[in-house]
Length: 403
Image (cartoon, rainbow, N blue to C red; front, side, top):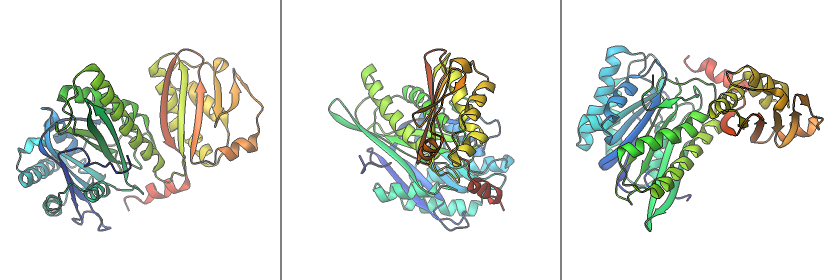
């Protein structure tokens, strides 16, 4: 399993290049290419302010077929007007020319600072360089992953292998995201960014792929938050080469869906773990809610509370902050019926505090992963959201990000 990577599914190549968009001189333009037209699906931000790349990407994904993805980091190409649109389309043209496919079969992405026009001479040089670098090795997959990073401290990768009809099928992915993270990804939606790119060799229809990606994103990328800020550029896309086993029966779809969920949830967890300034992952499990919607609202409200996140940073078992935020979100909640546990220790039950070892629970909160478990006692619905603590380093990073 550890040897699997983005290019493990049959039919894919990737490349990256340092074009000078990032002042650091690190890799900043990347391409993921399928050797044949791939079934494809994507979900995008629901933010009404969107990057030019998202506008073009929505249009190009509509047919459910792609040959490749082109990404630049260091510049978001958002709030850049008509010129930004021309530049996003030009990125697609450059990538399409390099691999010999229609422009509409390229999905563009950008991440970085909002409000700056793309440096198109560097983009042109970067696309050509990334195309020249295309290869199938683990090193190429790693270079692609590195090229999409901005404030991330580590690359984020995941993969799963399953068997269908006696044949191996691989689902793999990479993502980036550290700050400006609160994705709300949808198929058709009414600075730093969450970007995720997945590959698979499954033979699957675009319609089914679209449905499964939307469902998987809802349980993974939409369930992670660092600062509850859906970016202008948030994108998750998957390409299926069709060179592996067919996924068509109900059983096959279920197996594939489980593998896709595994990969996406691993990537989402890694985003929370690499949150800007984060020292720990905080998992919010809400059970016993009246509805799934209520469970999600309560879990997300707890995960996004600055008071809760600060308490987690300070290893402070301040359960009152958790109960009170659950009571003000737009969901049914009755403190008299709820039970709250921190790291497995019950601290509140049915409207009253429960005596506990404050120092002991505080020590348990110092671990790299913290579990907040709230049972609402109202129904059977559940939800999980991953977040991180809020540190002084988060403020420092975001105070200095632009300047």
